[in-house]
Image (tube, rainbow, N blue to C red; front, side, top):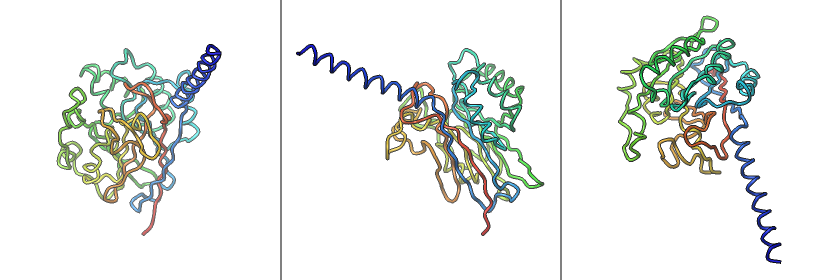
Length: 293
C-alpha cells in the first residue's frame, strides 16, 4: 500500500514538473506583439498611422531557423520604421552570426536604426568597432549620440540615438555601488540641444534616466534593458532588473512624466538570467496619431 502511494505521489509530481517545464518553454518562445497608440498635437498629419516597431534585447536568440518566426511577425505588421534599442547580442557570444543574418534580412525590407546597450559596450573597443562596422554594412543605421530627421510628405519628426555610458548604469560588478548621477546637463552634452519645435523620439537602452530624458525634451523615449523584470508577478509587475534591483521602477510598458512618455520593451531574449517566467518575449508596435487642440 505504501509503495502504491509513493508511486502515485511520484506520478503527480512528474506530471506537475512536466507542466511547469512546458509552460516555461512556451513563455520563453511564444512571441507577443504589444500595440501602443501615441497621440500628440506635435505629430505631423503626414505621420498619422505611422508604425514604428521596436526590437530590443534579443541576445542572439533564435525564433525558429534563421529567426523565421520573428521575421514573419515583423512582416505581418509592415512597419514604416524599425528601431533596435540595444543588447541584440550578448557579451559572451563567440560570434554574432544569428543577429547579423537577422539584421541583413530586415535592412533589405525596412528603414532600420540601432543604438547600443550595455552588452555591446562590454565588448573590447576593437571588437565593438568591428561589430558596428559589420552592422552598418548590413544596411542598419547605427546611432551614436546623434539625430536624424524622418521625412514624409515634406513633414518631419526627429529621431535621436543616445549611447548611455556604462557609468550611468548601476555598477553591475559591484552590486552595492550606485550608478553615477546623470542629468539634463549631461544629456545635452551628449546629444546637443533638443529641437522642441519638432516631435522627437529618443532611442536609448536604459530607462533608468527617464526623468532626465524627459526634462531634456524627448517627447517619446524607447528603451529596453530590464527584460520585463525577468519574472513578472500578477499585480506587482517585474521582479528583478539586470542590476539585481527588486521591483524596478521601470520594467515594461508605458510611463509618463510631465507630459513626456517612455515605452520600455520587455525584450526578446533571456540574457544572463537565462529564463523568463510569466513574461513572453515581446515585439513593440507604436502607431503615431496627430491630435488637434
